[in-house]
Length: 431
Image 1 (cartoon, rainbow, N blue to C red):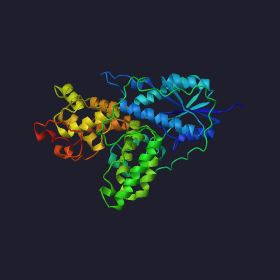
Image 2: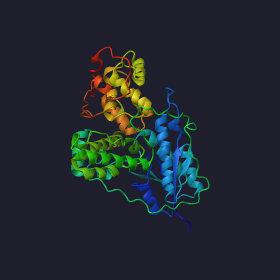
Image 3: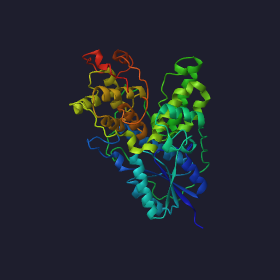
Image 4: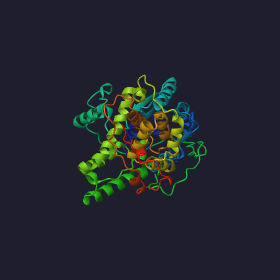
């Protein structure tokens, strides 16, 4: 009898620890075929001519895939890397390696789900099954106290019911071994140039350098909780800490799972509440996309009331040339590093929507290009909240407005010019 082989299609789950599809494949198959596919769709220019995926995020992804390959090799396995459309690549590999089934983690945003459906249709023609797993949230869908169609649109209600009536599952074990078939051509990791991008230039003003991969993710998690330990002992900061975990880049492509972070948080009681809240918001946005699909980020028969010179204002916002130091510094940092803190994201988004009256979808698309930690549900869900186009009953955050002079003392990403009036920064609190 021939060996049973399961192809594990890695997407936004670039890790070995707490990876259900990998563990299940090891348990159910004689051989496991790990595959990562660089889909040209994500590296093509948008209608505006900008890359859909910017250089910082692409470099982070390349590092993460390289780290996944290295970690798999540590288990005696290998990662097959290909450049091409998944609906072509996955069936080809399935045929070449006599695969019996394909595993992957289900996505929720329409571009990702469309790609899954194309792969599923292609495999169906070969009489192969694409098995879907759920592994991107802190709370598992099956453990929610309501079916997806009845999830409260209000985050406050969602939070109250989930925290009261649901539990977070334990992390799944790491496989002891991973047996793979004999692989003739594992494929080379592409370069940024092969993906149509240039090498990003690291700005010396950047406070952090984000290294892609599970190895770096675990280091960052350990670093954050070590800092939290010190802060608690010193009784310093809000609930023990005022600093960001900066785990979002690794969470966005699954180098670390929300459950792994959650179970570390549990060791710190109320001192971990802020980080736990952020993880719950990530869950909420994913579940909203699962419930509403694209309707969650579309206005109901409404036309945006745009400023007459909205395009020009959008460009000034992108370039950090609004004349408001708070806004411009944040945009300079985003452009130079691919990362800004969550509060500044809310502030610059609110300014684009409420003060400049520019197209919020263009702002969301710009974040998609630039952010290292771009995640479709969180990015577009956040922007839709600020633009007020969905059914949410309350704002995401009460953003405290910082005066420009306060920001100037804390960051190097500030223009040399001065705003014409301090009042230009007056309407910065997101809706």
